[in-house]
Length: 401
Image (cartoon, rainbow, N blue to C red; front, side, top):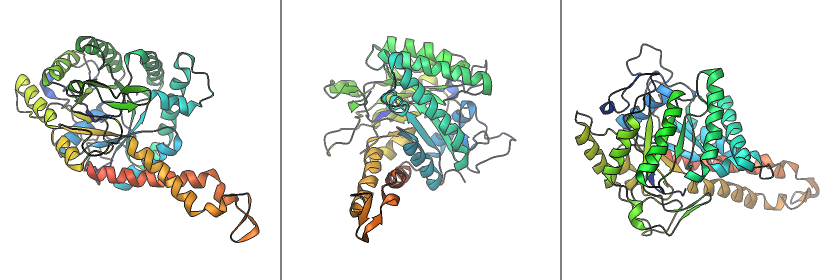
């Protein structure tokens, strides 16, 4: 699907207590705040530890973010360099990070020359990268969420392959390989969208995976999905649709989910005036669901903001006030990575024209300048800087200790 500014609503589904079902009005309130377990991070629930966060710990983290009022950057990555940028940034800004893989990103990680029959390369690339993150994440002493992005109906075989990898990993380690997966069936009728999501929710819940689903369409174009000509009315989700999805998915024991509700979101960055975000939709949706559920919880849903690149700080923070706990960022971080490489080439241009010979002498070697790690590191650093800026906009700075 495209990079639009879509929001995810985390329904008060059951918070990963095997076999247990919390009341729908609980809004994933199974929290470890009162746990006697020692804390790894002074400001986070005790269940949240350095490294990849799944299950109850993930639910605790998202609920805490909503309560405190910050959102987690969710960044699409295409290899170890962009993965490293994400986790390095998280360490610098002192908060959690969500590392996200797309179907196309997975294929790129596996190698564009690899056989992608039946999505083999797209699956293998995502699995390999997830294992890479699991090996290195704890070294940075930050919480990391492993996620996959938009999966439309035609791409469900890709999701089935990822689910199989999660099930296999769960058998050995007692936790899933990934923290969460997104199904984006927003182009299908509402009932079909949620019926399919419910089928996958049952499978996910069995192994402590959180489901992210989308209602309404994210405009723009991203990774093979083109919604540039979509009817603008479909860019705005109705509260009734969200509540219907919430009720249906909450029926699944041990379910934990978030919902991307569109409020004018569009993937990509556009000139001012070309995108009309209406985050007030999220506020009204919270009010509607809260009234339907009863009780004292005024923000029963956890939202996710898709297509965050290029959005104003005002819109971002108003959305956080409505319960947004994660914002997707891709276009801005792609540019930052490239701009870092471009700046490196500009700075050392005269040292990058031949293997031998530079301004210091015709016989001087240039290996240390054209070593790929040099330019790639410049890209990593620039992307990390951009993510630290994003974390500031999301109020996600110094939220660990």
